[in-house]
Image 1 (tube, one colour):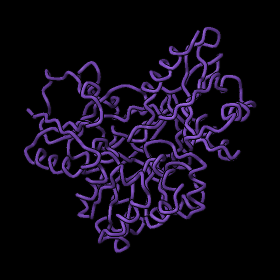
Image 2 (cartoon, rainbow, N blue to C red):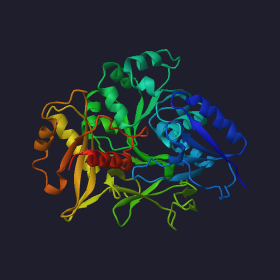
Image 3 (cartoon, rainbow, N blue to C red):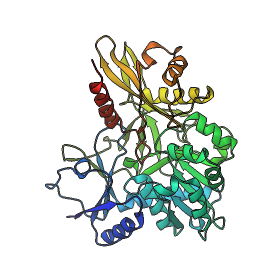
Image 4 (cartoon, rainbow, N blue to C red):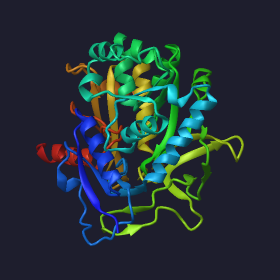
Length: 417
């Protein structure tokens, strides 16, 4: 019977958590990584009655894009297979994984930040943490990284979420930092077209990828060469990965590193795959080209869709479209989140939460956005617009829609009737 240990992860001191994790793994324990900034009641499930498998292994939170709490159990062998597949992908690009310097600005308690550290550990490569404080100050970031002994002496690779990419692209020092990378994996959320275009214009070697906590990180990746040539999407399967679409049009993944089990609010362990060994993601997708080596395009969440006036609407696609249209119109819109609220006539109607790039809200900002969407179908046009200066994705690059729905309902309840 395995042992479960709880390990708190401080975003500004990830080295401490990494050292503790090594010790727990050496003792054969299962380790649950916790976020120091999140209240414990939002992270712990009542699972004292469970018998844990033989360890060592990790218990990781899913990204939370659907708003639910779920934990995935990964034996160490899954992480090893994931790192190996990523190393094979790099080697095919002509980059020796063991020669790299791996920059890691993502949270250690999520698979997105755990796996860069694990890859470097397995490849015997250099690894360096980039704390949130550094990522918020591109000048300080560039100065810090230039002092690293591996700067420019090793091929440098980096993992980012789109929000981090956007902030770095907006700053000259951030652009200099990005331009030095041999590979920049972009995942966690869809890469907006306007960010992809800016990155191509800057010659950045982006590698948009797709992965999940359930698959021990990335299962597809687009090569930087294809990205710079204008190819869109999340690339092709890594070694040992098969893709297909299910009856809902959602992506299904088959590989030898799916989570051993899932633990949800019912505090019961259950399989994440069907009888054929396929995990069904909930992401609407298209597969282009060869069935055995397809190009992946992700179109939105099945569970994020709303039904408005008899029409199925996918908010994530509309968010990307609105950001792109706002950029073209010269509006400094930094973030937008569309949520569906109950409506007696329509079933549900979209409302928009927006954050502008400047603390000074532009005059007639909401009116300008309404004009932008005036030609959209009625079901796709937000009924109301709410200024939300604190609007942001999670540290893993996900929208916590349940959190922002609660914020919205509070705002509405505070308004005079």
